[in-house]
Length: 409
Image (tube, rainbow, N blue to C red; front, side):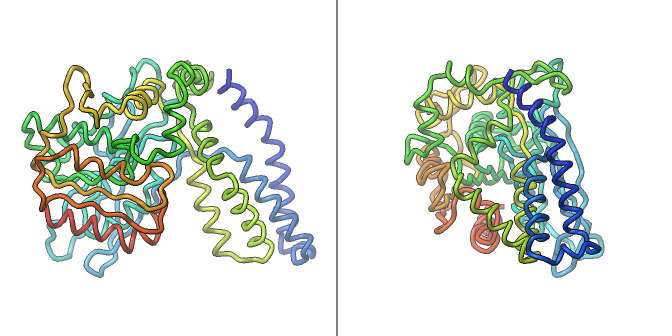
């Protein structure tokens, strides 16, 4: 019912958006003398904001057409090299023909399945491309997956990571951004137990909830405060008619987005107020930066109910990984078995999603990794998003990741 009401509300808001688009076009037209007045600019700015807030945002494109390798701009081709029901493995193939032979490390970027599309990691991939062969898990919106294609839970996530590492081949490096830190650890432990020749050369965990008993944040408290029955009744809905995944039980992306926004409501309100001022003043660059950010931020995907609920129980309520009691499909997850890969953990000083120490806890779970193959890095002055995107990521964190991968390649 909740999902159907949301869809109906979006449909009812279409006339508002159409009206806003007409007002923006009228007052923003260079042929309209009022477009140069404060009133005209204010009307156009307000109409743009209303239009964008009532718009439906689809999956964005990565849009990474080129990169620079050895000082040369080269083309980048986005290729789907493996398809699964709930994910596709994407490779960013660089056209390095004509350049000196290279032996760049293969990197699997494991994107979070947490409401946003993998394109949220565009900046992560962009910074890695000049010196790495980059692959990424491009998760599918659950409402687009027919019920006949089966279910997807946390155990499936672990298996997908194993399958992707095996497909990429030996010597790959795994980078888990936020939520996938736990299933990536699970996959690494299973592959280590099996002495799998395709296990990752290094594991990089960035802002992940390895042990949420440490420095609990607002999302962690929410998980502990409410029962599993509350989650089932309050946040799980069925996909309505009109989508391929009709009747699939999901945690809707719009609910996840609502929780993200309410956590930092003042910040989002102030951001839109500043956007209004930029538009009135004609400050093009800040206005365009705001548009790009919210085009990505407001594009959300649904998660399968079984994946979301199992993650809440295993990771946030029962802390099965750090307690050593996690069993996936009858397979004991034993992080102590991990000895060959190097381990890098990255945390942000101001992270309000994964508190300080939650990711670093991975080192305590992997005593058999040699001391010279493990590093912990804490970035001052950044929150959760800044760990994997933005200037601090490009200039300070990414070099740490690059050097660690090179040292253990």
